[in-house]
Image (tube, rainbow, N blue to C red; front, side, top):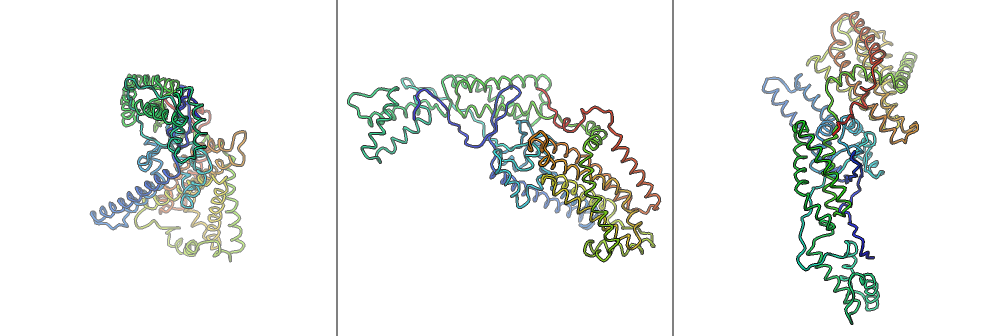
Length: 600
């Protein structure tokens, strides 16, 4: 029960932890955030989102009234669409990517998102985990909660895909040092041994005489090496006396859970001021950035960080208390995250990747994109043929609104008004709504890949059926040209983007079925990085397609001009995807450029 030689410290943190090794070969541990704190942070963030949206609605209303317009005016409607879209898809991403992995809710709950290796969260990983959030929150968050309960690191699907983990940030406090009073000996028992001794003393009066004598005899045999019994002293009296003396020593010395061994106390006394100064500097650097230090300041900060890692190693060797070790680990972790922060991406570099890296990645992942295209176009062709041969099924497959549009198409063609008129509020509102919807569909196609690609495939099939059946309804009324002239200017880019988004979801989901030589988890995380890079390019393509659909497709340009525009757009898209980026080094690949870290 008692080992008088050992001085093992109990861990003051009973949470699950994640151990990582820094480039300086020093191991640090992060306490993991639990399901309760993460859910509370989510609720806090949702409350913030709701308050911001309500404030946006009020601001739009007041602005509209101030300028004498109605709430349904184009600027107000565009602001509400963009505001709602940004809050839904951008709130968590922006805060986590650019505020060190913390949303306001996470900051209030003292938790943070970091990479599996302890590095700060990258922009790429923030995008992955937050797009997949739409799947994790299904069933009031039960999907994400289920996966968090399965693993030892409490990861939801977004964390598995992004290789991230949520950790706790407990207060960093170094223990106070209380000197031993003159004539008072140091404690002789470690914490578990003293706790067992104290338990006996507290309960001894409840034991019968035989049981108490037997337990006291066992304790005497173990404690006798530390202090001999007095003459004619009973075993029970010796244990009580030993406990009183040990308790007095511990009260005077305040060791064990406060500072550790004598060597650890000396280290704490010598270094504490430096450690506290580094903590203040780290907080200032996190608020203002490393650039605020200047070149010499960064070098000095890095030198103090390396000294701190050496102090952590010494503290462990000297047997410092768990509180001291934890505080040092948090400081080392803070310095590590500041010095190895991912390099910020410049607009020039992003543009270079969009010009060459994205089309090269599309060519490299042509197979899942081809499969996605087949899942979109094959059901679409089938639906088209079915309704052309059996038009009586139209009302079972096609919406009443689409049928009404087709029936009104002859009159609209005769009047020269085309497939659709822009809304009274203008082309800008139409384009904004179209872009928001299309990007949302692309995000869903990507996120649905976590179902091993099944939900992505279903989404593609349903969209294909919708497209094919809609065309068939117009063809049955001999007005296919009306919808064709409207769709073709933007359709080539838009449908290609949807196929690439579907291919991204299928490629990520294929990790569960065909992981290759890697584990399914490793393959999932690796393919998610390429998939999110594809989604980045898709978002730009849909931005272009939505602009065309809002301004060119419904315009009063002659049909010939629209078809010529569509031909030029299709040719440009083919040249871009097939030819751009050939012969360019792979250094611009997003999986590498988005995770490049700066050396200390």
